Length: 343
Image (cartoon, rainbow, N blue to C red):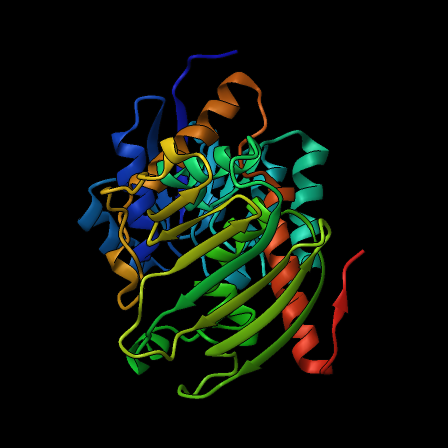
């Protein structure tokens, strides 16, 4: 066990990297050492803005011995190369969701980290929401009875400028898809974390509004291995965009989360009936920059704590791969027009 502050390097200087930078700067168990961009021009601009060392390549950042761990904030289809390079240099890795855009690439990251013994975690910050933790505890304690139905609704809006602002957004090569794998994946992760392993999925996807390769509308019907059923509705084409919802139903009650807040809690235990929350965590329903950094901060703290105490992070590589596997199953089902079974 070590109480040494963990030196953090952030790979990427885009909008999500700002959440990570702010989080690290507010935490006492780690410190920011440097960041890395992919060009000298962007590095110089970011260095002036942030007031810290910005390298013009992640390779240069990884040579800094003061960097114990890296946070990878590059676009989704560009996580593999920096992750493998970081693992080779013995750096612990926290990677933005999704872990990568294919299972094969995700497996390579997981294997590389396991081989050299570095910690790997995937950003699913909503697992650190106090209201979600309260829901999960209730389910584990059996307060909702046997789980029978779980719904994930991510009916968001993104305008044309969002997809045109970066050449990777909504592309198969850069994003791996669109609405489900990028925006929907957070709530999908919560759904399967609560409901358990998926046995089969039948999915439909469409591109109904935007000029993109990936889907801006996706639906799925799930059968879980515990015999419960579930649905997913994900979109970036809904006007004006609504807060994401997670609905969990059991034989003895139900709980509904909206934008990370408990908005409905009804169980047979009358003492727990009024359990609504007033906490605000922000929703990216219409604006991706509206989400706050508090939950990122909580997950980064967990990651650093795992390094210092040689523990497994709450969301490790195996956990982080689960939602990707389900979404790839939805895409496969939509392509083939049939139900997909999971092993």
